Length: 252
Ligand SMILES: C[S@@+](CC[C@H](N)C(=O)[O-])C[C@H]1O[C@@H](n2cnc3c(N)ncnc32)[C@H](O)[C@@H]1O
Image 1 (cartoon, protein in one colour):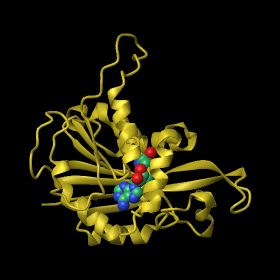
Image 2: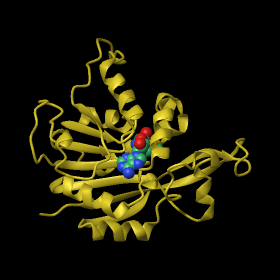
Image 3: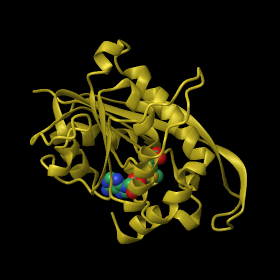
Image 4: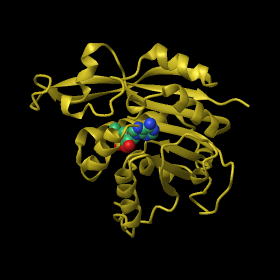
């Protein structure tokens, strides 16, 4: 991650959740993950989850009620501060009445993760105690991979973070050709390393990192407005962007 992209996400953190495209993309990704995870709540509720590039924690907080814990990691301090603020503020009352329960199973970590044995990952979000060498049942990452300069090293680290049998599920927009560049307005290209994911490249990268049962498929499509002309700053007609879900499993 470059200083420029870190600065960009620190600046954007305060308004991140007000972007309707971001909210819709998270809801679609959350549904795509749930559709592929065990439907038995007794199983899913045992999962310790690692959310890489969690931003303000939109996906982490959506997953949290169904799983045992979420360790939410992001290198941008502004994003992690926004998540910390959400966790510290009283939750809204549930629609069925009564008081909202505070989220007690999500731990924000500000880090550019490079080592599965990073001590910041060792703290169990539920017990708040360190458990050195802690590993995860599920690693997720949404809308992040197009910012990661070295995907090879990223997936090697994620593989190392998983317990035997642990699963990886990552979602991001697909590089379906030159038009994929329009996903970002030209003013937001800082830190964009690639204009989406290529199917065959993702398949090869996950296999190379040691994952088994690798699959890469279309998960959903996101319709969003794009610039009328590159660099105009004027948002015009909508375009549909396909999103891929890339999955793998750690054996042994
Ligand atoms: C487009 S935002 C997505 C945030 C969140 N996942 C969401 O969907 O709301 C990309 C996030 O990835 C983080 N990021 C950038 N480079 C990263 C890297 N190399 N490893 C992990 N996260 C990274 C940024 O700080 C930023 O919060």
